[in-house]
Image (cartoon, rainbow, N blue to C red):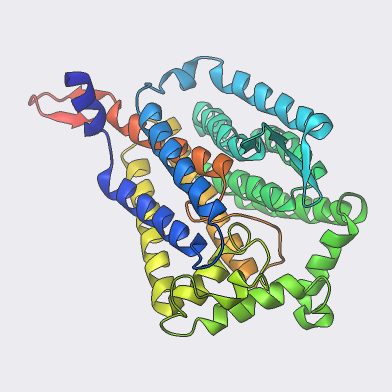
Length: 373
């Protein structure tokens, strides 16, 4: 009984409440007054499993990640899965990115992001005072490039973009020098040029070109982006009402339950609903920053910041492509979109953050007051 009480004492109820509210809003957006609700029914199950996974993630004391080879072992394991999916993975919407297990599928790119956060947090925490050495930027970049490269091959350009954003954000937080930042940006520009020339498929190039001129190919590559902006704008102030989104429910807006769920949500909930969405997500990030500030060591701080970066990059890239500010990359929005792999990954990440705070060591000062915990 004491163990259960101690476990629940580690829960950040405000953070969990915001996350569950976002997941509920996603469920409501998937609801339709006509036909079956396959996505809604399955998502209810995924949310239940995700909450259970969060509670399970609260149990371990993750201080072992700082000293044991578990982080690197996990990294090798996820790299092997990313290689394996290229050979035996199922193809969905042109991407060979998931293992089809019948009733559900697993997309290894999602847990790969979390494992990368763990690896980078450990790497930078052990070398915090030596971060000025450009060698560490290159080594951490190599860790990232291996995962990012395998994800691009699938091809999953959206997830690769998130992986790059996680690395860049964690490098910035760890403390990169200005001249090194310029070098990194230069290497990034060269890398993008090489990617454009040899790595991107023609349809991916067309999406980027269409982003620069969205109206140039409305019936082709620009169709999804155009329909998405129409859906967002048609929501106006109060929205069309739950289940009455014509762009999504009449299938003018493809993949409304995943890649374009923000547009579907904005159409039905309107401007006030979008404000509520941003408020709840901001609260999630605020709580993560608070946990990072209270981290016992640099590892806990960097890990929590990495989780926040993962969620923020997903959120803003998804919304950016839904409102025509970024190219369409096929990316989910945290907690809102349909899908098990991403939902489980994000809930587990939050469980790990809460566990790190709960299991943080305490220090006794000379006046017997307790610090930490």
